[in-house]
Length: 92
Image (tube, rainbow, N blue to C red; front, top):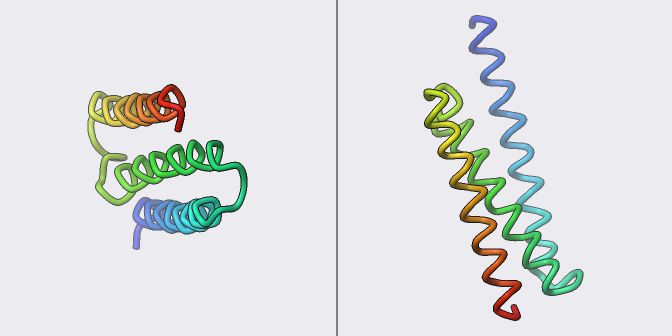
């Protein structure tokens, strides 16, 4: 195994561990712990962070052209912000 492949594998493992931790946080907050409105906003933010990590490390967007990576990152931020805004303004 080359050093590059090993580095990519290590990053994928770290991303997977972060995804597992994020899932645990979302489950904990979604199970009624914490303030409901804040918990909902945090769960949405965690969900989109997970979308970004899956796209970057498991769908090979990490090796995609810079423009595509920036568009994907921007999409995750814009859609997450729009959903959070709609939730907060709508009285969630």
